[in-house]
Image (cartoon, rainbow, N blue to C red; front, side, top):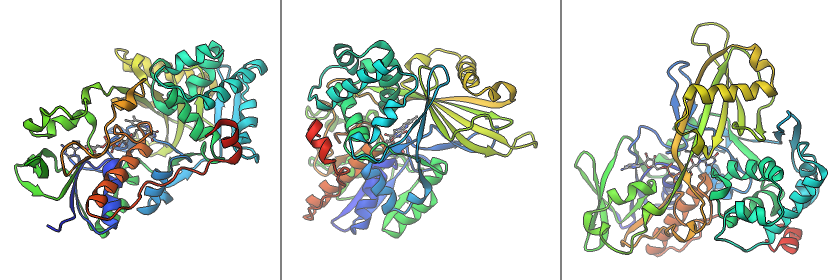
Length: 464
Ligand SMILES: Cc1cc2nc3c(=O)[nH]c(=O)nc-3n(C[C@H](O)[C@H](O)[C@H](O)COP(=O)(O)OP(=O)(O)OC[C@H]3O[C@@H](n4cnc5c(N)ncnc54)[C@H](O)[C@@H]3O)c2cc1C
């Protein structure tokens, strides 16, 4: 093999980003994925009742996700993404608030939208704005955002109706398990630094299509050999250097560099016993995870008049209208909706039917058509280890991409990227691992894309 041969284990966003960057720069890349499709945790499956390809969970990205955007543009799948012009918040009493940027420069662009939040009183909005300002200025970390909010005069109503709604959706954790610095990053990048940071983008196709044929063809054209259903059993290490992998079928592949782009709880089992014993490996067990659930509903008619909405003070956090699918009973098309419940710790042990009926009841309170219509089919999907929990201190536990083993890189949303566990974080980790490999081959190049440029006023006011 040429001296820049690379094996990437794992075809999630981290492995894909590394493969795209290295393939484009002339490396000989082999991407090994154990499942029959790419995308990892951002994936779809076929619902047997409807025959439709549905996502394990709706994935969204934001304007501040500059590396994810760059990856999608590079590999030519950005045309499958739909930037959303506005969001809708729906208060506990059904109050609708449109959320979009005004013409003002950052960080003032979202002030009118925040002021329009109909489910907060004037006093609560004042308190919220002073809390946001204080959070953006703080340099603290090591305490939970729940503790910080309580100490900074945020009332239970403001916490429930605003802070919890935004942060649980963004970080998929409960407020008593989120480090204040992770919470600050959400508001700094998403709300304050740049006018476009908040802008939500949604895939127009199932995730399996987004990370499907077009992407595979692009990778193949750029010298990446993509091997699906090709599980890796172990990394081969010789004299302290990673030299290849052993596949589950017993065959071996050699390479100059290996990237392990698998979830953190899989890494240890892929390392040889003697490497597992070394004291300088990350403590993978200390990286905690959080669950995300999604409720999939098919009605016999359209029941929701918005493309998506954020629901306040309810079990259901976001609802997405996903269009119609042919009816499996041969009648009129069914209308498909997906409700996302992040940090769904409390659903554990609850009956699926009970959760679904609570969600349908909540939707019916907001959209009366829900009670008039026929619910044709429903299902609850829970990803128990959906994302890394951004608990206080977690950043000190996330390892760099260069592993202690020569020739072996780690990649994944759990590695040190400065970002929470998201598609953006995963892409960043893949680019960082690729940077290390290029540097080892003598070609130093910065692959990480810069953040959106911080507005002057945001710098002056908050030191962003
Ligand atoms: C329910 C849910 C909702 C989410 N919502 C959002 C969202 O809205 N926005 C957002 O930005 N992020 C979201 N995320 C997070 C996002 O999906 C992840 O952060 C990202 O996809 C992680 O990518 P990764 O490459 O690090 O890991 P993974 O996607 O886990 O990829 C790892 C890959 O390695 C493969 N693998 C494992 N072992 C082996 C082996 N031995 N041999 C070969 N291959 C192997 C796996 O099959 C997998 O494909 C969500 C996640 C979940 C689960």
